[in-house]
Length: 381
Image 1 (tube, helix red, strand yellow):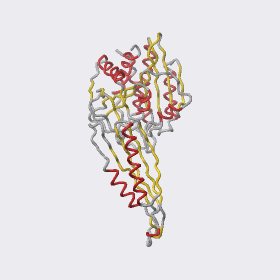
Image 2 (tube, helix red, strand yellow; image 1 turned 180 degrees about the vertical axis):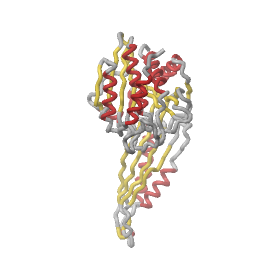
Image 3 (cartoon, helix red, strand yellow; image 1 turned 90 degrees about the horizontal axis):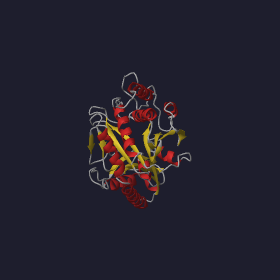
């Protein structure tokens, strides 16, 4: 039986929830996590990696595999409507994706590593900022202080509302898709609204691009060649009713199960847009933002998750279709052999990013157990 100080971890999680910080601004959250980790006496610890990122490492008595486990800790720009005592004190900022819970679970793993020790191998716990913007993993990996260690396997979890509490959810291959947002900017020439023929208005081109791009959609998640396209913003001209617009833009968020498929889609959208711009005699440019690489689960890493669930007597479900949201752990699982899995937050738990969502404290123990089970299975492999 694991010796988990549940009350301490719940109090820690609720404190993080009460004092959320947005992506890239997680200074106080990171300091709380760092202080907690120092008390768990890691072999070494580094902070301020790629912003406010932290990596704490415990070394075993004998040689073995080096395992990395990652958690995120940024919040979202969402007003919280809950009225419990640990509701957010920051107006329009709250933990609506459960990153407070993810970070607390990893702190629980740190406490277990301190109490139980490590017979062999090494375990690094990576606390990552700015997951919601897709910038955190990229910034940490690019930081010159990011360790040059070879990680044999990397793991992460995400809580999943709508699924049974404590259920471990696994999937072969893509757990989440590759995602990016494309901004297509068009430049023409303004004119008097009475004489639009003397200018070059981008509005018809925007409409044409919209229609052609949306025909590429194949929103069937069960299919390997899924393509999801969502128009998210359109802009043209100003609210000056005597002026015919001379510039505009259309923004799409696009997602596919693999990075190669996404890059092919990007090229297709750019080619379509260039042809339309040429037809309407407009200058065109492209910009990409909020990009996430697909979380592709390595079969060996996945087997450790399955075996850990079995050994810890946790219920496990293997799904056939992944989740369509983006998750920037994909950069880690792209670089190293990795696996992202899910843990059920309860069938009646409000959905992620909803204003009434709150991470269920009951899941903390389960998260610690499955991660510690993964460590026990993987370091000796």
